[in-house]
Length: 304
Length: 261
Image 1 (cartoon, each protein chain N blue to C red):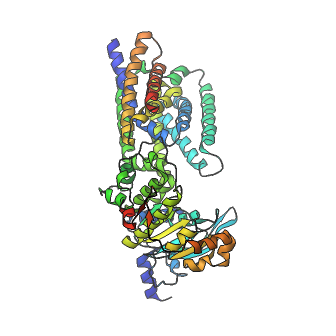
Image 2 (image 1 turned 30 degrees about the vertical axis):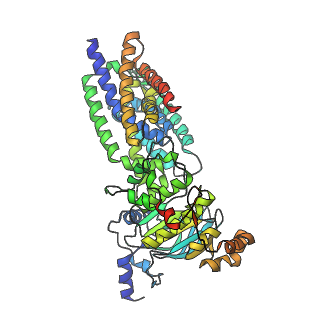
Image 3 (image 1 turned 90 degrees about the vertical axis):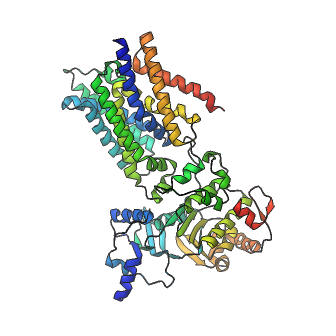
């Protein structure tokens, strides 16, 4: 390891390692999310990292997590790049959400290293949740809560996800699809470099799913940010992704969608039908459906 | 003389409502109604310890409340038992400890009834001053952390991911509840403090379209109930604290009309 290599890493990355004490860890995560200056990292951290020519947003290197003696994350390595959609698929209990929590800096790991680019802004959309009806909350207030002290106009973000008309609505009265779009707008509000979306189409009806995935693909195209998305619907997701990681505590297989869909491990986890369904879906569309199922052009659907 | 008494009681009640009602909104949003009761139960231990060590009872109540909150935060780190079970354990452990401590005070005068039910009519001008100072400090603290506590109530994980220190925020919230309990004890007593926090907030819910609106409305409802409750209590010579709580409950029942629409 050369000295110049080390200097580069120190200036551009922060490091999560299991040996770091909890306060360092939390402070780093907090600083990361607030975009404030970061604590410098310990020199030992540079040891296992091999320099990535693509300058990744986050790079996880052989990370493992034990829970009651069981490996819930087993030797997982992954790299998230800018302008790239990475889809994380896997059965229930595969550790998808846990892995996301690790990448967000909310969960300590037992071994391995997570490299996070300095001042990386992450937009996070958690798994669909039921909003407590006791809280009177408009979409406007829900979004401004994410702003902190800045006085940004939130309307463009709602427009971007096709939810401009929802601004005055009570969160409790939104449909599943509307709520997911509002959460997506909220994740976009600080202009993130990386979007982390945990099951973005949960609670959305079938016709809405495709529209939402299309929207996510468009966000990548217009913003050029990196996207990490968790899903367990397989075939719809695969088409838009640059990279698919199939997780079952360890990484079963990963690569471009076509490769993963034909992989034996994938077939073992999800069954032959799923693998074949991908082929069925992988065709070109000449029209779109909006939220109510009407046929509309692609652009209409986004700007709605 | 009676007018003066009424004004003083109403002023004291409104001072407590200033902080109790907005806090009550958060208690409802976080489904932590039992937490208010638990802290209130621990109030008796605070009173007894205050008398044993000859320190200010409000300070003792606050200290006991903080110890309880600390225990709760520690216990919440385990994931097997839900929070209501933990509160059930802590509430009764602290109540039992309070009764034992009170038992050692038999030779001294410990008017249990006064602490259980409060005595708003015994409020002095100095009490009122203290109530307003404490209420305004608490209110400032609450407003300062408003967005964080609100975000915590909406979605804990999202709050965490957005950089909110959840344990720290939760501790501030618990500190505020303990302060309110210490403050409100003389007004309505240990048994009815939770009512003063929760009922006005619940009454405000159907009329509010934002969290802030709900907090302001709950203070107004609380203030109105206190004035009406005191007037009724004077008229019919009923105990003041419980009469205020019954007035609040009547207001809540009326608000059900709005709920159903």
